[in-house]
Length: 129
Image 1 (cartoon, rainbow, N blue to C red):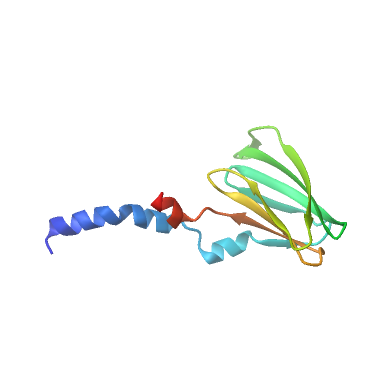
Image 2 (image 1 turned 60 degrees about the vertical axis):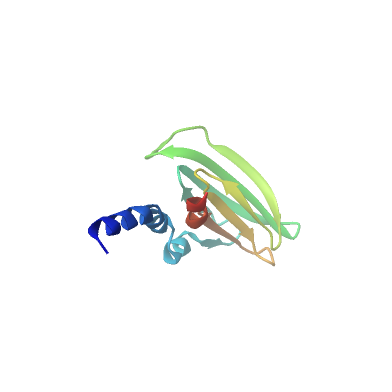
């Protein structure tokens, strides 16, 4: 194969290589997962948004309170907003952040803990669009 053909082939594969590098590894994803008991606070940064919250058990579910704000370095770049919602036992939801990212919140089957994780968009799906 000529050097020109190799260079053309390598150039054609660059977008796929970039998408593969952007994809979050499984170990990096697991570092974002936290499990919390009632009234034990969580703090997660998702893109440019910082989420802080907690939950209490209510009506066989998880009553979650989340405060989030856009951050720029160590400073708030906008007014914080407070959200309250109840997840049924075994339920989950996503709170949108930016660039397709979200904060995932799930209530355990017996509503005694929540799981919080940073959700990333699928890089392979993004590359094909």
